[in-house]
Every structure is written in structure tokens, then in C-alpha cells.
Length: 615
Image (cartoon, rainbow, N blue to C red; front, side, top):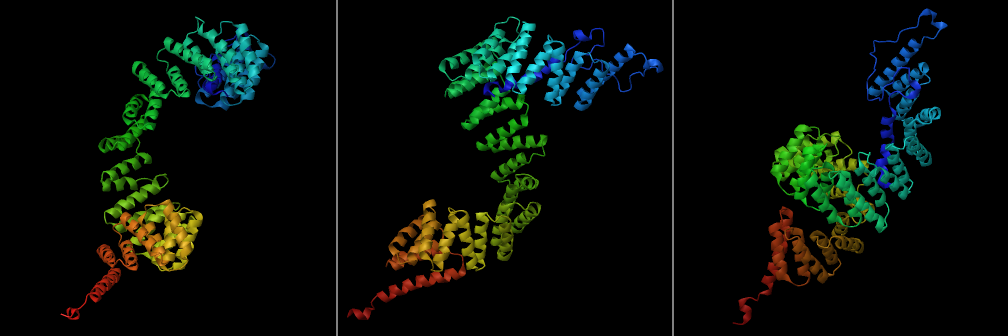
């Protein structure tokens, strides 16, 4: 389907439907009058008014009054059912009307319309064709058929119907419009333009701006410069006739976008909005454009129009709140989000954003309360639970944080990130066995999740299960060859056990390529080279590691060891003292003190006693 005419083609049937539900046609003169549309209710019969039953002698004589009354009743019921949306019942009622008034083409056309509304295209065509066959000059039937054939993409047949209408009734204004749409669908652009021009120049046509708009849409499909110019001129003609025609304004902007004249299009829409607006569709487009360009003040102004005049003010309010968050105007963002929640308290998305603002503004209790109100079936539940637990941990309420995650996992098992954080909190509490059991369950549920498997490996390291550490870190790298943490952890594990040092070096170098400024990774590579006896290179890397991670005791200690191996005992002494100040583990503190003591001992041994000087 031609992109330009998707909208117009979609209108063909609905517009025709309204036309076809007309009043009395010549064939039913003298009979009951069947009123125009399913949207009207002129002769609807009350449910209590059942049609009169025939007298006992009606077997030999058909009473015309009885037949007319029956037809009226069933037609009225059909209209009533149609109004109620009971399509099948309406169809049956109109079919019963034809039983009592089989010659009525108006009823048959009404039945065709109801078939169409029920989605029975073939049946609708059958009834409309029957009307056109019996009354070749029936304009309503032919307009309906044209729309039906267009819907079936049988454009040649549609053209025949519309051309017949124009022959029957040359002053008909619908047929040229629909015919132009069909020509456009068939890429016969010149014919389409000719059809629309006939409307634009017709003094009886009440909406000539629409004709010029459609001409502009047709020509915009043709990429040659002359047609693009004709398209622009047509849109301007439409706007000259009807300056507030938003479709033409938006189409003209689209034309400018195609030409890479983005600023020209935006400035045109802003001028249109100022002079003819506010228009919600223009505001929607401009707000989105300005958001994409990070022009939040301009976007906010357009969103205010949508908030006041649009069909979905809550959506506009939410986007306004997000802009306020982006600009760090948290008090106004909070007020806006709270206002939305009053109108839509079930919106978990809005509640999540409100909680996030409270978190950002250090209102932790409010943030936790809102995060915890997000239901388990929400897409925000997992992240909300993690945030609530994190905030609770920050309040030094580790047990409460763990309880939040336990409740969250009970409500939603398919939540890998909750498993990960739950294990990290148990790790922090020293409950390694419980953390290991939880992660074992998690990697069974999510065997392809590299991060969960990484955490499982680290917990096993805490438990001293080196075999499992290596097994699962290798699996991590298999699942994600660029998993920096996994590469580094496995390399360091091998370095610490003084095995597979060449493989460890390869892993550490790959990790360094991915994160060249990570102090921990530089420490791992430097430590591996130290283990391999490449002390000079080890010193260079470990010095870089200390620069990037100056507050990590073990890195400072490693550099001290490397200095010792390269006969730089003064530097080693300083680095060991730095490591000592940073260390918190009592066992490690004693180890570092021994190294410092060894250097002091060397200094003492190197000093000659006074008696040895010969004085």
C-alpha cells in the first residue's frame, strides 16, 4: 500500500458505510420507510411491542398491513441490536426484514452495511452487488462496493464503481475523492492528482483544502525535484485555504525532513503552533523532537500543551516529570509524579520513578516504601526490590535488607539479579553456606547467566573450594569471553596457586585490553609477572595499579614485594607501611609487619658498629 495514502484508504469503507445507510429508495416507495443509519433510532420498537399475529383466515390471504408491520418490527430490532453492538442479532433481524419485504433494496443495503461492520466482507459484497444489479443507478450501493473492493485490494473493480457513480451523478463529491485514493494505491499518480484537482476546483466542494492536501501527499511519493516542489506548493495552497489544517502542516514538515531540512521543518511547525495552535499533534511531534535533541525546555513547553489539551494528559505529565528529573529539579518532579499517582495509583511505572527520585534526594524511607509497593507482576518489581534492599543495607539494617530479598524471591523466582544481590548480602554477613546454596539454585534456574555463575565461583572461593572456583570461572568465560571479572578472577586464582601462569597471563592481558585502567586487573597481571620472575615489568604494572587503586592494601603489598625483588628496599618499606595503614585483617597485618621488620633488620645489619671503625 502506498505509504502516503494509508490514512485515506482506511477511510474508504467507513465513509461509504455512512453514506449507504440512507433513507427510502425508489423501490420501497409506498412501503414502510427504513430510516437512514444504524446510528439513528427513529423507528426502534420497544421490546414489549411484539408484531401482531395474523388472524386465523390469513392462510389464504396475505395481509399487506401485517407484512409491513412485521418488516417494521424486525427492521427496528435490527437497528436496536446494531446500536448495542450485537452484530449477529442485527444481521438476523435485517434478514428477517427481507423475508417480509424482499423487494426492499434499502434493507438489503442496510444488511450489507451490517455485514461489513461484523467483518463479513464477502457477504457484504454479495448484498451490495445484488442491489447494484437490481438498481444500476443506486449510487449508495456503488460507493459501498467501491470501498469494499478497495479493502480487498481489487482496485480495478473499485475504479469501475466510482466511475459509474460519476456517470450517474456527475456532481457527486465522494467518488472523485475515493477514486483519487485508488489511483494513488495503484501508483497512477497523475490520474490521482487529476481526480483530486477536480474536487479542488469544484465550487460546491466544501473542503478544497483537503483536495490540495491529498495532491501534496501524492506528489510527495514521487522523488523527482519537480514533484517535490509541486507537493510543497499543494500543501501551501491547503494552508492558505485553511491556515489551521494540522495535517497539511505536519505533511509539509515531513517533506522538509525528507529533504534533510530539519531546522526549516521545526521552525515552520513552531510558527504554526504560535499562530494557529496549540495543536496537540504538532505538540506531540515537537516534544519528541526536542527530547531527542536534549532541548528539554522547549520539549517541556510542548508537553504543557499536551497536558492541557491532549487525550492522554497523564502521559504528558510523566514525560514532564522525567524532564524535571533529567534537569535535577527534583522538588517539581516529585510533585508532578505524586499528582499522577493520585489519578493513577495503580501505575507501577510512575511509582518506580517517584521512588527513584526519593532515593536520589536521600529520602530513603519514602523511597523504600514506594519501591516495596510495586507488585510482583510488574516489570519493575525486580529492580524495585533490589533498590529497596540496597537502601535498607545503607541504613545498616542488613537483616531487613536480606528479608526484603527473601520476600521478593518468594514472590518471583525468575529474578536473577535478586539472587545475585541476595548472595552478596549473605556474603557480607558471613553466611557463605547459605549464599552458596542460594546461588546453586540460581544457576540451576539460569545456567546461561554468566554473572550468577561468577558470584557462585567467588562464594566457593570464600569456602575454600578452589576446584569449584576454577570450574565455574572457566564456565563464565565460556559463556562470555569478554567477562572482565571472570577473566581477572581466574587469572588471579591461578597466580595465587602458582600454576598455569602462562594461561593466567593470557587471561589477564585480555582483561587489561578490555579495561586498561582497572587497578585490580593491572595488579593481577603484575602479580603473575612477579610470579614468573619478570620483576621489572611487574613493577611497572603494579605502580600503575596503585595509581588507579591507591586505597587497596593487597595491591600496595604486591608492589612492595616487587620493589624488594628489584633491590629498592626504601620504596618497599614505604609501600609496606602504606599497605599496613590500609589493611583491616589482623592476620594480614601481622604478615605485613614481618616484612617491614625484615627490612629494618637489613638496615641494622648494614650499619657498621662504632668499634669496627678503628677509632
